View 1 (cartoon, rainbow, N blue to C red):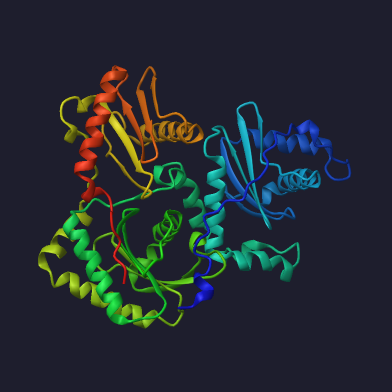
View 2 (view 1 turned 135 degrees about the vertical axis):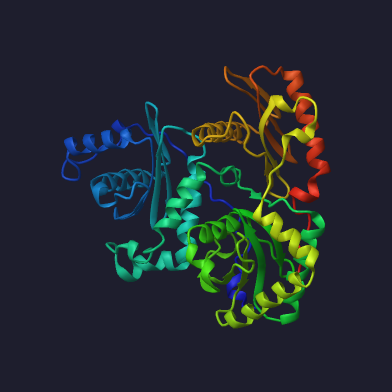
Length: 455
């Protein structure tokens, strides 16, 4: 095993920063740095954005803007660089400021400054963390830290990130539509427990039989969900690293055309080095993607043989192969009608198991069917989860509005957010939530992974 690549596996510690609220009038800028008229113009432009993420170097060089207009915002980036640098001179860090209903949040990860402008205040810091990890997945922290030392302060990092704009844009757009990102959880593909166990067993056996020193993980992903996971001995894969892999395959349709070998950094596993991913779609006309991860760059052909052996083992079991393909072709979600009487009052739910960091959610149903309706639904879930996680002492909350009611239940084991009809009463909502939790417990083997085999 190449220890240099796995030494940083436990990277879950977060650095603490001091948050300060800075009004724009407090930051005194010299005229020679930024003209007052230009400053006011740029700040007005900033306030016009409904939602915008951007990345610049700490030297003020544009790198990424979610609108795709990096060069048009050079002056604004220079202004932001001055703000951040000036506050840093005070021995502090500029985290956020608000103007009316516009919220601006910064994440300073030298040599980068990331920022988000949003009309909604929830999860802004988390969005920037996800975007930063997406950048690190392409470059690694080691390369990111050294590039400006080697190339100089004025280096254009977009040269190294060329071709990754789609992944970064998808990272931004998916955040606003997939609860798994802001809940920092993995969605598990619904599958009969016996079929999942058989698939995982075949994967583990094939990888183990190859006796390849350096293979770390094997995953099957489909429809942005985890189907199966196997791992080497004690190593664990973080849910945020799984999201990076999901984002990678979701933005590269060309990966479906054959077997691909690509380096990738998984920041939560080890942000200083690269793993090498063998990517294939072994079952035609399905969305199932097999990813085999190794520390060794010379393992492509060996892992290609492992992939062929996994396919052979699965197809040698007609029942498993048939069940797997059928499930992949017609994926299903948790059906709320399973809870029985009163199910019509429960419109939607999101459940997260805090211990496994896995989640389950219900399928689309009236009144959340159209894109705009589901966008509104997602905003409600994001806001509710933000309140729950920001106030851990709140174990249960019920909010009644004109068009819906929201029940939040949270403890050390799980987080549950239910969207009900506005006609539901708190006692009935509590009863239905209990019925839902009971049904989820009964269906746990289908919707959650309790064990990941090792090889």
